[in-house]
Length: 55
Image 1 (cartoon, one colour):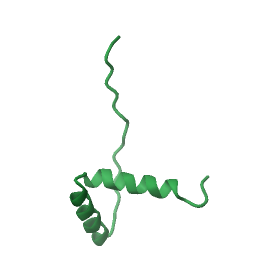
Image 2 (cartoon, rainbow, N blue to C red):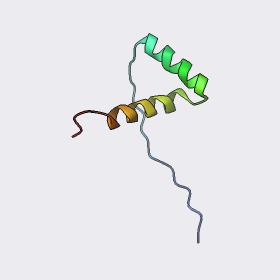
Image 3 (cartoon, helix red, strand yellow):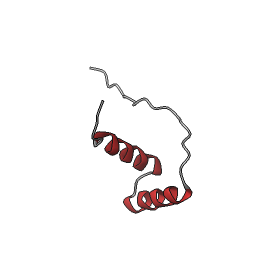
Image 4 (cartoon, rainbow, N blue to C red):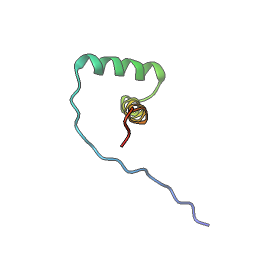
C-alpha cells in the first residue's frame, strides 16, 4: 500500500473589506492562534451553513 498525500484544492481571490473588520478579524485570529485566512474561511463556512434560505 502506498502512502498518498492529499492536498485540498484552493484558489486565490482578492476581497476588499473595511479596515475595521480586518482589524477585528486579525485580533481574533491572533487570540485564537490561527491564521487570518483560516478564520475568514471558518466564518464564511459558518455563515453559509446557517443561511435561512439554502439553495
